[in-house]
Length: 88
Image 1: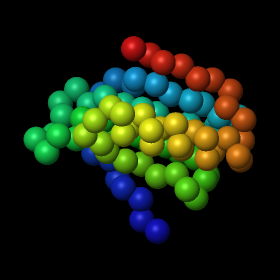
Image 2: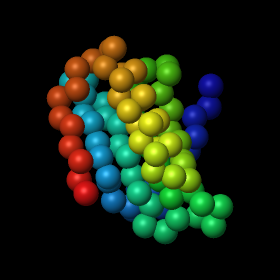
Image 3: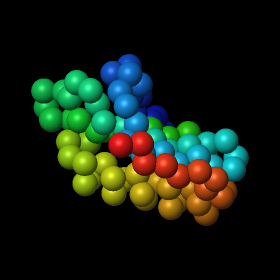
C-alpha cells in the first residue's frame, strides 16, 4: 500500500496539536501557512505502526481534527500516549 507523501509546505507550517507515543511514534495536526487553491489548509502527519493510520490533507478543521483523533485512538491500541499538547 502506498501512503500519501505530504508536500514540503506541510513541514514548514505550525502544529495545532500533537500526540507522542511510548514507542517513539507521533501524530501531528498541522495548519498550512499557505493553503492550496483547492482549499486544502490542514494536514495530519503520522509515524505510527497502525495499519489503519495514514497521512492526509483536508479542507476544513473539523474533518482534519476528526481524522487526527481517529489515528490517535487507533494507535492507542498498540502503544501508550505519553504526551498530548495543543500548541495554539
